[in-house]
Image (cartoon, rainbow, N blue to C red):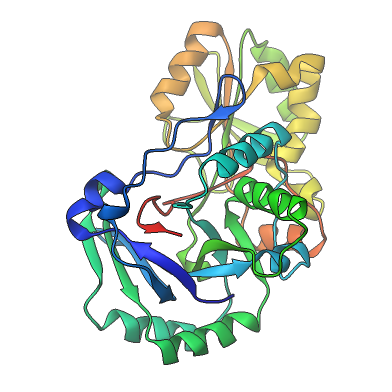
Length: 348
């Protein structure tokens, strides 16, 4: 990890420059067009580490923005836990080649401990270089870390292994471009590094496009899960919610849970429910949906086509790290990190 040469958006231009991050592919395998970056909207380049805070009410997420060498992703000092879709990676490679200015952030986790907390808190005692209310009502603030404190942060982060929280596809695309360029030693990826307590982990939902045989689905679940009907929004902790036949079910695993990827709720459902239920059409009929999509919209889709919705409990941080420790990867679109840092705050 090292200081990054960045330009921070000017306060008066922040509301038009700062947008939600997206790497969603559209028809033809390309990305949604990136909004143009006007250099006049950004402050002069400054090299250093930066503290970036998102705050809305009592919800606060604070991370350190820095360059992380791509060599660290390749040699295992920064570990991923989730598989990637090759079509999306190729789409990002094309996008990055066409739009060389980077405005998005990859989110990592650190175990820097009290020293990192102290240095970050001291930085935030000073006036920010940027402070504004951005999309979705998040107050966004940026501080430049003093050089002496930045050197200590680099040392602290260098002593631990980091895990990718969000941005596996951006990492994979960046590594592919790095390989094609002959692995230049100076290549780095702009990241925001959070403490574990700053992580709010959710799970992508799964929806099977209908028609679905509700009786068959219930029978498949009953073989390994305790299944009870429940009221909407009243799902017991660590259980899977299933909406089928206009009814909500709560499914709590009763079978032994294997270690690693094999023990994830998504893996168990894929093997014991999704596969037997839809057979060879699983890939075409199963949708991965982020938690930001309103549940009412998803249940309406199920009511229209007779499909089924699965609301999964997120993997725990312990499960995430167990998967990484074992050298395994979760299926694509298993975890969802929220709130995501926004694009356009920094230009690299």
